[in-house]
Length: 233
Ligand SMILES: [Zn+2]
Image (cartoon, rainbow, N blue to C red; front, top):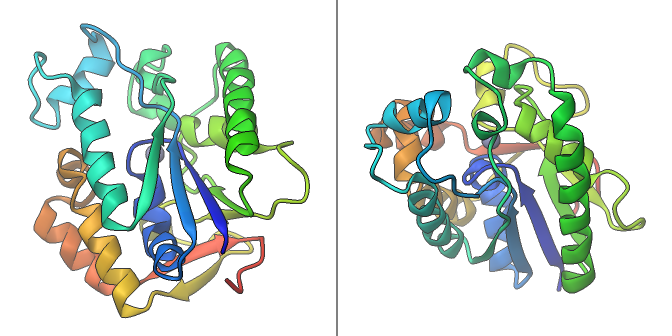
């Protein structure tokens, strides 16, 4: 039995990018945990942070992160994974003031966040003793994904780390990133992934257009891409 740890920047990345592979681990009897890093609340978000909520059709009164954490619990259950949430704040709460800045230069003020996140991940390594770890390759270059990847560097030696091709960014980019191996999902894994993806109701319109469109896209994109690690699981 493997003890699988997937380290997700946001509440959806691990499932969108590697949900079928994680479902396969669970079907095979592996213990799967999805750790999501940026799930913290901010009371009364303002500016761009508030806009990120409003543009998904959610009014200012709604606790956006609580809603997304609940979606994540359902999504993890759908693929047989345990959910673990860390209270780090997403980039719009750390001074990134517009959509463009999320994919541009990192702020120096993120350095202590990387250090704190590295410590939080290390303590989960101690607790879970994972035998395989998954994390973001950072296709699409979202600053939060890079923060997670940096925090995952220098963790326990000897544990294989597999980097997932971030989805749906991978679908939107013209070239396949260097070293990525795309593997087809078997039918039960693809079905579990679709059930899981559809739990992230608040994100489906923004990421795919609609829930129907997400289902349509995933019925055609039945593969996941990875770099590194022992892929013969
Ligand atoms: Zn993300």
